[in-house]
Image (cartoon, rainbow, N blue to C red):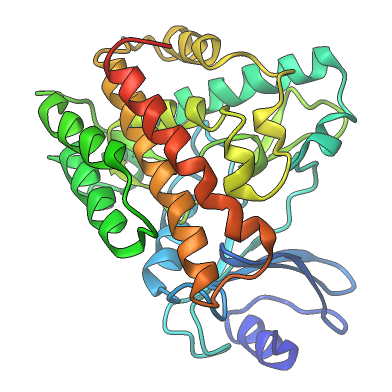
Length: 334
């Protein structure tokens, strides 16, 4: 982080800076880099693409800024937007600046251990409610009509992740081709359209520290678009699989058995959203297919030298598990 360049950018955007800026890296690695920035009065969060391992993309940053700005006055809690450097003029890469939101981020099972069972239950209920609220937002009403291409969304997702497998596969897995072919045959004839987050689970939210049953902000919007809301719900449920720990390289909070089962989460969403879970087996299968490819991709990049550590090397161990689970979902099995 070039602190002097950041300060110049903020001042040029009309943001009052009072005192020297202090910058701290909050998180980095495979996702966008996130920095906490403070002067003597205010606090902000700055996000920019990673410097290596993934292709930096102005598209991702523009997506984050566009959707959070649009949702500012909606029922979905987001960090208020401050400024956006689309061209990367200030730092050499695109950058978003939002207000800092105080609260607790529950990333792993050690973080989850600080919550009581009642607090865990309240938090998951609130998360499901927020996801239902997101899917209830009328894209046109918040200026997001052109935010994505909802027509044919699920079919494109099937093609996308099959294509990605061809780029990152590290071995032959018969279940991949079998699941892909089955997904092509099972694509629903009709699907709903909403704003989708694309990566919704507890660690992509900020909970109120005093009341974890209150979501203060949903974060990490770089995969958001207009698409089928059931893809969000299914992915949230499949993230509950214990093998997702291999993909993340940690004991994720969202895989803990203290949380509701995937079936319970899905039914809670259906009640909160007033939405039928039609073709549910297809959506679960697609989510498993996607996560299996992602796990393979992490190991592929590690072997190419773009991702380090034993955790990245092991991520592909989850891939056969996800592919098998996807096939079971399409067959109506558990």
